Length: 139
Image 1 (tube, helix red, strand yellow):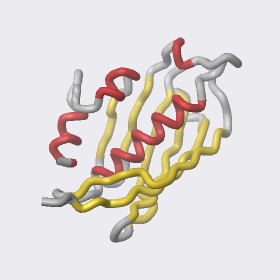
Image 2 (cartoon, rainbow, N blue to C red):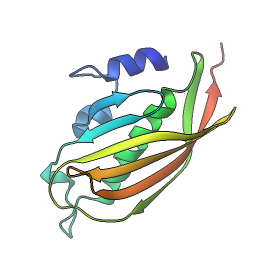
Image 3 (cartoon, one colour):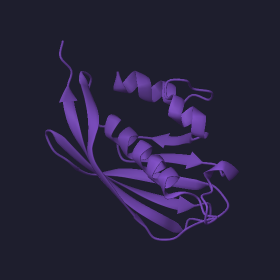
Image 4 (cartoon, rainbow, N blue to C red):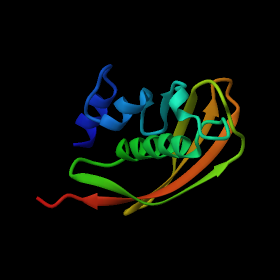
């Protein structure tokens, strides 16, 4: 499942991940080493103080980290987030954001991953980390 899904989610107009489609997230790169997701600016992402909402950044980070994990699991395995944290460093009011995720450590049952959230100019806005459990599918 992961490999077929990863192939299909990279296609233009994909429908295998409705959340990515709904938010307008573009998949720029998926490999075992790195995943890059880009989210173009939408006025609806602005919260009351006028900046892009932290939850939007967290969602982008979570999706990027989940996809780098999926690129590292084998056939017959799936994954689930078991914890996630995010540190906001700088706000942004206009322009798209990018998430770059990578695996920090791959254990037998848990993968530790990290994502940087950057603005269109490459300025670091937030850093996220998460742990994902590897789940063996029952046959």
